[in-house]
Length: 286
Image (cartoon, rainbow, N blue to C red; front, side, top):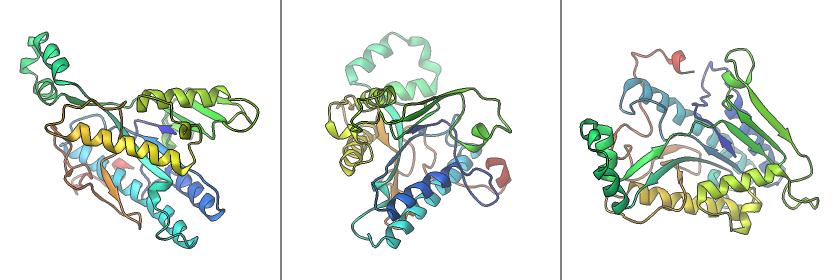
C-alpha cells in the first residue's frame, strides 16, 4: 500500500524510476506464478485549480505514468499465457479519497457558516455535499514487514537523497506478516488500521492477505461503489469509508481511457485524464 501526494511520473528523459520499479516487480511476480498486489492512494487532482494549464499538464503526465505501468503488467500477463484469465487491475490499482455528506448534515453546516457565501468553492461543496480529501501523507507498506512514513514522497526526487531535503522513519519486522505463523506484527496492525480508515471497516478476513485476488476484489468493489455514490447527482446514500477508485478505465492492454460518463471532475471541472499544452516545456513536469 502506497500513499503519496506527488505525481510519480515516468516518461522519456525522466529520472523517476519508482513507478517502473513497482510495475517490474509486479511483472516478475506474474512470471514466477506468485501473487502480488499494489494499492496506490493519490489525490484526486494535484494541489491547485484542476482546470488550470499547469494542473492539466501534471494530470496528463500522471495518466501517461499509469498507462506505462499498466502496459508493463499487461505484457507480463500475455507472456505468462494468462490473457483472458487476468487483468492488469488484478495486480495494480490507483485510488483517491473523498467524502459525501448527508443532506441534513450539509444543511446544518451551511446554516452555521454564512461568511462563506462569497466563496464559490465553499458554495459548490455545500450544494453538492462532496469534496475530495487531499492526500498529504507519505508512506508505503511492503509485505506487512516494512513501512516507511515521513515527509518523503514515494518518488525519485524525495527518495534519491540528491534533491529534496526529507526526513522519514523506516520500520522493519521480518517474519511477522499475517499468516507467517509468528504472530501479527505492528506493520501488519498499521495496515489494518489504514483499511479501517479507508474502507470504514476491517472486518473482512480477506483484508489480512492483501496480495490475494479476494482482497483486491473486495477493495475494488467498495472503492467503485464509493466513487459512484460520490459522483452521483441525486444520491444521498452515505459512502463506506473514504476510499474511491481513481476515475479512469484500464483496458486489457493497459491503455488508460475515460471512465464512461466521467470525463471531468465533479463540480470543479477539469479533464480527469488531463491535457498537454505546448506552451509548457515538458521537462518542467518531469
